[in-house]
Image (cartoon, rainbow over all chains, first blue to last red):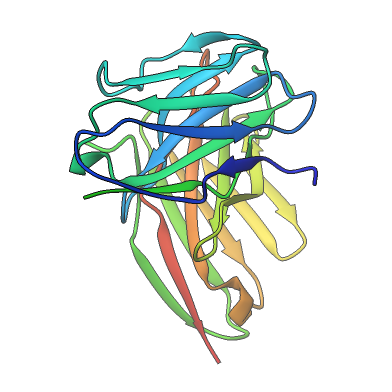
Length: 115
Length: 111
C-alpha cells in the first residue's frame, strides 16, 4: 500500500468530546498537509508540516485544533471540545517536498460527525 | 469573496466534450491544478499547468490558461460516464506550498 492512509475512516462523537485523527503519509514524503472539506465545499487548508515542524498553521480555525508530527512521518490532528460545526471530512495529503511543482497525494479522508 | 470560483454543475451527454471553467484572483499563483473527486473517495490529481504556459494537453484533457483574465479551463474530450465526479480547480500561490481550492464543479455524464 503506497498511498496516504487515514484512520479512522469515520468518526462519530458527541459535542464537547476530544478526537484524534491519524494520517500515514507516503513513505519518504517530507511534507504533510491537513485540509478540511465541509459539505458542498472545496478543501480548506488547515496546517502543513515540513518534517517534524509545522511550517504553516495559519488555517487552523481556533485553538481547539492542534496537530503534531513528532517523528516526521505519521501525523495526528487533535480537536478538543468538539462542536457540531467541526463536522466535515478531514483530508490529509503528502508530497515529496515543498516548493515548486510537488504533487500532493491525498488520502481518502476521515468523516467526522459531531452530534 | 472566494479566491477560486467555479460553476457548480455541468451536465453533458456521453461522447460530448465537457468544459469546466475556473477563475482565480491571485496573479502570482505559480501552478494551477485540476483534481477529481469521486463519491466517497479522496482527491485525485488530474493535471496541472505552470503559470507561464497557455495550454497543456494530456490525452483527453486540455487545460487552457488565460493569465490576463485569471481564467482556467479544463476540457474533457469524448466524455464518458466514468468521468462523472466533482472537479476542483486549485491554485498554488507564489511563496506558499498550500493549495486554495474552488468549491468544485459537479459533472454529470448521461448515456
